[in-house]
Length: 154
Image (cartoon, rainbow, N blue to C red; front, top):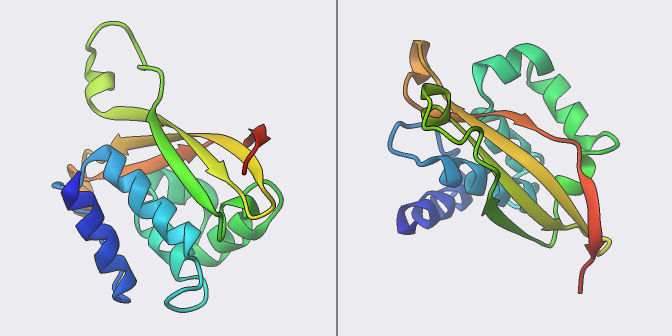
């Protein structure tokens, strides 16, 4: 996991972390969450740009170009992600009991997040290994569920 923190530290130097086959699934989620937590730290919407850089090509096809993606994150539902107080990543339910091929290329994590207003939200964060093209063998995010209220924070 030490590698993940190095990658996050690099993000704060003002450079986007780019998808790379050596970045583990949980690190992809961590990099995106650190970006969103500090969305405007480097420059306006830097965190959204960092998150977009790990959006799976399938996901980009659905959300459209970056400006639409940014608008979606600022809209109802997802805006709690921006500048949140803290988060915790847990392993989500395994996609299946047997070790199928799908299991090897797809991971689901449960993310618990304390929003700026103190609400604790839960998301399902799903990453998938890209099988072709310029991001081949990189883990990237295919889907993030709508947040569910999970309780009150500190």
